[in-house]
Each structure stands twice: as structure tokens, then as C-alpha cells.
Image (tube, rainbow, N blue to C red; front, side):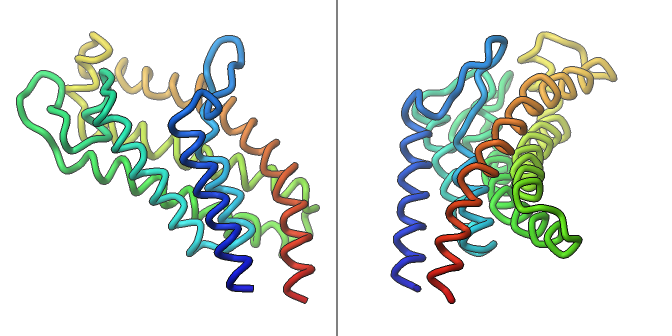
Length: 206
């Protein structure tokens, strides 16, 4: 079982790397590009447990820091401790927290949501869909709120807005416009893939 666990972990890591560095990690939904990188993290957590899920989430976060350092965008200061905060000449170690903590939790929370729903006799497909969507929303909500509270002035500058209530509405708009479709995609993918992997993995354990 350890060999099979290591094999599956390696497969999930390979998918995360592939999705991170190629266009395969995004799906066009017409009005947005939904990221898929967190999906193998979520599925890995549910199938292999929260420890492996946390490892996969950590890998996702580290790759995010690498990509934002190598190919910076206007918000890369929030994900890379090597990119100066917008409007300053200083970098921030808070970028490590934003890049890693939400992604690690993305690899932990879906497992416990799935187990909680199973105890309440919710069907497997429904439980997996909800767990996948929950994992995706954890990532989006935590990342956007951490950016808002830690880098409020820089985020306002990136949006060319004043700091205030209107700025948090911009955060909420990202959560709903990007986060909700990504959560739906994650839920569908998790329910389709994880249900098969769980059956195979549990059968091998018995």
C-alpha cells in the first residue's frame, strides 16, 4: 500500500506541475479562465488523506511562488517574497503565508468535509462534489482576504481604487466571478475522478 500511495502521490504531483507550467492548467469558461491546479490537490487529499493533501497543497504553493517570481504580474508581490510590494522597494515575507497557507488548507479541508458528509449518509457523488467545491472556495476566499488585509494599499493601487468599502467589493467580485465557477469545475471534476480512485484504492486496501 505504501508503494501505491507513493505512486499516486507522484502522479498527483506530476499533474500539479503540468497544470502549473502549461495552458492545461486553465479552462476557458467564456468570461474567465478557471484554474485547475488546485483540483489534483483536492482529489489527492480525499483519496490519500490530509497529510498527503497538505504535501500536495504545499507543492502547489511553492510552484505559485516560483511562477510569480519568474514571470511576475501586477499582483505577484502577494505570492513571491522576492517581488517588491507595489508602490514600494520592499518585499514582504507575508507573500509566503499567502502563497502557502491557503494551498495547504486546500489539501486538508476537503478530506474532512467529505468524511463529515459521509457520516451524515450523504451520497458519494454529492459528498465529493461539495468537498471539491469547498476546497476550491477555501483557496479563493483565503487568498483574496489575505491579500486585502495584508496588502490593502498595494491591492488598491493595483486596482486604481481608493482604500475603503469599495475595495472590499472588488475582492468579493473576484470571489464570486472567479471563485464560484472554479468551485463548480472543481466539484464536477472531483466527483467524476475521486469516486473511481476511491473505489480502486479502497478495494486494494481490503
